[in-house]
Amino acid sequence: MSTQFVRYTPDIEATDPYFDENSQIVIDKLEEYIAGSVTTEGTGRAVRDAHAKGYGVVKAEVEILGQLPAEYAQGIYAVPGKHGALIRFSNGQPHAGPDVLLGPVVGMALKIFDINGPVLLEDEPDTGTFDYATINAPVFFCNTVEHYLFINDLFIEAGQYFSQGRQGQHRFFREWVTGKGTLDEDQWAWEELFAFVSLAQIRPVNLLLSNYWTMGAVRHGDYVAKIRIAPVPEFASRVARHTPDLASAPEVFRPALVAELRERPFEFDIQVQLCADIGRATTTSRRWTRCHLRRGA
Image 1: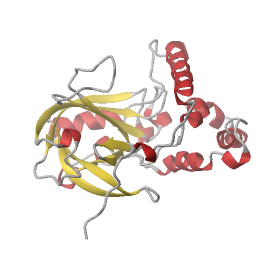
Image 2: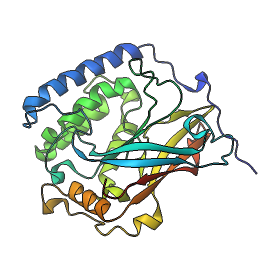
Image 3: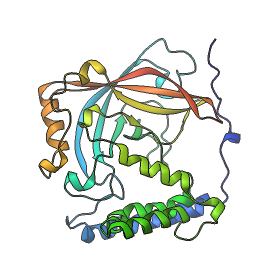
Image 4: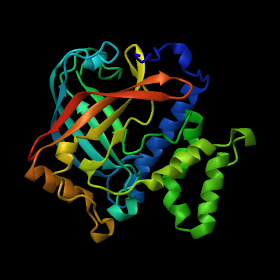
């Protein structure tokens, strides 16, 4: 029996009358953090509020495979072919520093070139590019922009809390759940906290061996999807530097990535996961795209 996928309609999105107002507050706070990071991060330059430390930019090629079922042949997947691409590997933290302090939450940003159609960014309508921002965890720890107002503050300040031992940890979790005292008890951010704590279960592996997800759902033409970028097993089995010891040197992820790609090419599958039940958030996954990382890039 074929799967019936959820079709996108505006009704499946929750309307937030304060979205634009709160989004602007978030933007203002991020701009303030980035400007201040020139001093606070000790690098002499500004860093991002997330994924501040880059491990490398890799030249790649994305191949859209042919003969797709109609539900998957949406948007950039509608026409088979090959596209140039760039990948940026990074750490998820809003700080720069030794890998052991930043931890194993890492991301992959994929930019695909020569894509027909307008770009949604108002100041870049004709760039002909398509972007995915992904991370090695499947669930985002913010449900709304209102949650992001206080969660991003705590995310940036987490090191300060946890450096204070058990008391600091308790204070961090209390302020997260209660929204720094702004949330009513029946609105406490338990789900967001559990999603954040789940990041502690991630174990460090070579950047080429992680699965990467779009944490939130994305519009996929007439449908709703999440995207997973997964190592192709045939190529993953050849990786020699499998499990890095983050305490062995200040820089661990980048040297391992560079060494592997100098020795051999690598491939990922880009998998579209269509929503099959909006209540249970179930998905069905298919591989319709392949990303080739070129040797020596």
